[in-house]
Image (cartoon, rainbow, N blue to C red; front, side):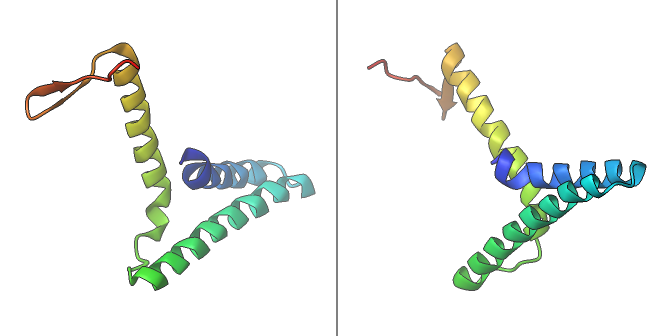
Length: 98
């Protein structure tokens, strides 16, 4: 999720900042790659919006969804591996050893 949704935005921001410091042809490539990756995100979101009749107004927040889903996954891994477990309606849920 981070690689697909968040890294293109971070990479584009860094490339633009670094490009403003150095005026070289090599600095243009990361900017083009970042714009290309974000354009692909938008294209896939547009296809999904048309197919499922959803609005496109929040498509630019995809970077945030990548961060949120990744943090939930990391939290789940930590809770499972450390044995802290989960609770649901006051009852503990534990992973069954196989």
